[in-house]
Amino acid sequence: MTAPPQDSAPPSEGTDAQVIEASWRHPDRFGAVFDRYFASIHRYVHLRLGESAADDLAAETFLRAFRSRDRFDLTCPSARPWLYGIASNLVAEHRRGEARRYRALARSADAADAAEIASHDERVVQRVSAAVMQPRLAAGLARLSAGDRDVLLLVACAQLSYEEVAEALGIPQGTVGSRLNRARKKLRKIIGPAGEAL
Image (tube, rainbow, N blue to C red; front, side, top):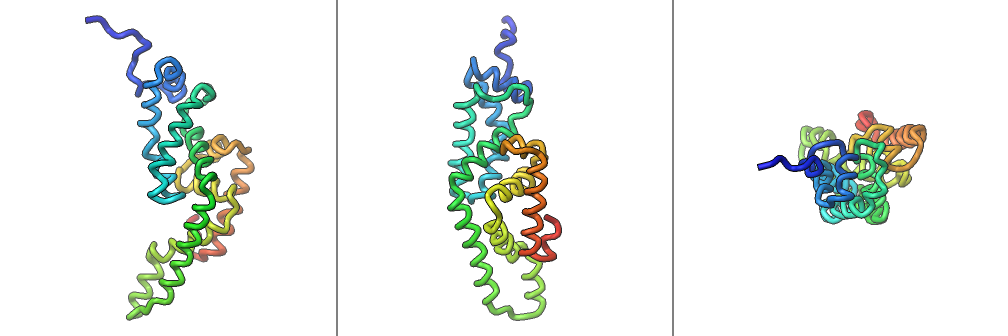
């Protein structure tokens, strides 16, 4: 039995750019990019828009990437910023729903505050719980501009570097830094001392 030709190497080998270039001739090779990044893109969309949108928009991200793979910049070894850029654009198309979701989460804080708390110990536990922080964070996120929110969530949720965020959103690195700084300041004002980690 002879060894397969070099051109049919397993799709999981090589940089993303190499895999994408190979997918121009062998479309099934693009599956390696999907396998590498689907879970993280899905998690990012889930954090932005909720579970109901995550499956569809994560899949749509890869469909758009596949359809435009011939325009991928092969000098970039990683497809990660490119994919997060596509996902962020899809999220932007659903931004109204996202802002409504954040406002609804913020309103749920009012209901939690109105609930009777039986003891001092329970009040302390409630104040430090993530369930209480979530509505305040959601209210803060809803008040950010679309650009500031995108930068903050790409850094905090997707853990992209400034360079990767700049590439994903098509903006200068300096703009990434200023948007992130502005978003953090606004959130700290809304969240208070608990938001210092942002």
